[in-house]
Image (cartoon, rainbow, N blue to C red; front, side, top):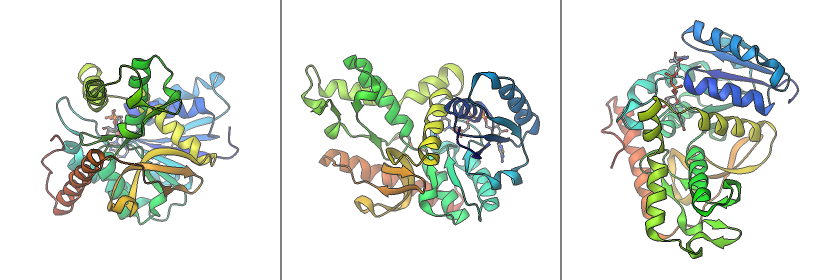
Amino acid sequence: MLNGVRIGIIGTGWVGSSVAISTLHAGIAEELLLHDVRPDVADGEALDLAHGAAFYPSASVRSVPLEELRQTDAVVIAAGRGSRPGETRLDLLRDNARTIRQIADRFRDYNGLVVVVTNPVDVLTYQFAVASGLPHAKVIGTGTMLDTARLRQVVGRTLRIAPQSIHAQVVGEHGDSEVVLWSSARVAGVALRSWPEWSAQVEHRLAEEVRRAAYEIIRRKGATNHAIGLVTATLLRVVLRGENRVLTVSRVQNGTLDIRDVALSLPAVVGKLGAVDVVAPELSDAEREQLTRSVDVLRQAIAALERGLSPDGGRQ
Ligand SMILES: NC(=O)c1ccc[n+]([C@@H]2O[C@H](COP(=O)([O-])OP(=O)(O)OC[C@H]3O[C@@H](n4cnc5c(N)ncnc54)[C@H](O)[C@@H]3O)[C@@H](O)[C@H]2O)c1
C-alpha cells in the first residue's frame, strides 16, 4: 500500500466498481473514495467493498460528495452511461459529454492525475483536458490500453505464448478506427510476421476480434467491466509508483507524428507526472494511412461536439 495515497472514483456502475476492486487488490491506495450521482449506489459499493477488507492490502473505502474528490492523488472518471447493443462509442458522445463537462468544471484547480474511462474515451479525454485547463500529460484516457491488452491475449492464445511475452500494440482511437501495429509486433525479438504459420488472414481475423470485442461482450452481458478495471488499476499503479512504463494511453497530442489538437493513443512513457513523453512508433505505409483516418474520425467527433450536434457515429 502506498502511504497516504487517496484515489477517487466518479461513477460506480459496472466499470467503476470493477476499477475499485482491482485498485484495492493492487494495494496502491490507503483511501478509496467513491462518488456516484446516485448516492445509494456509491454507499452500497463502499459497504460491500469494505466488507472484503480482510482479503486485500490495508485500505479504507467510503462514499463521499464530489467536492471531497478534489483532495485526492488521482481520480478515475467512469460516470455516464455505457453503449447499448448495436451502438458505436461515438453514439454515446452527446450524453456523456454533458456529464464530463460538468465534472471538468469542478476540477479546474485539481493537483492530481485524471484518468478518463467514460466512452467515447478519446473525445472525452480531449474535452476534459480543454474544459478543465489541466496539463495535458495529467489528463489520461485509458485509450487503447484495453485494446492492446486484448490484442496480446488473442495473439498469445493463437501462438500458445503468455500475453506478457507478446510485444504488440494498438494505437489511435479506442473504437472502430483503431490501428493494430502488426509491422512492429514481436515475440522473443522475432517479428510476428516471420513467425511460422503467420499470415495476413490471421492478422485480419485477430484484428477484427479485438475491434469487435466490446460489442460481443455487451451483446452477451450488457457491459464490459473486468478487463477495463484491471487496465485502470494498472495505469493508476504505474503513475502513483512512478514506474515509467510505456503504455498505449490517450492524451491530447502535441505534435508526435504531426498529430495535435486531438486526443488519441500512442505509446507514452507514463510516470509520476503522467503521460509526458509520447513515443513515435514505426509505422508501415498502411498503418500510417489508418492512423490518419483515425485522427479524422476523432476530429469530426470533436467538431460535431463543438457545434453541439450528434456525430454520425464511428463505424466506417
Ligand atoms: N474506456 C474503456 O475502455 C471502457 C471500457 C468499458 C466501459 N467504458 C465506459 O465506461 C462508462 C461507464 O460504463 P458502465 O458500464 O459502468 O455504466 P453504468 O451505467 O453501469 O455506470 C455508470 C455510473 O455513472 C453514474 N453517473 C452518471 N452520471 C454521473 C455524474 N454526473 N456523476 C457521478 N456519477 C454519474 C451512474 O449513476 C452510474 O452508476 C461508459 O461510458 C462505458 O462506455 C469504457
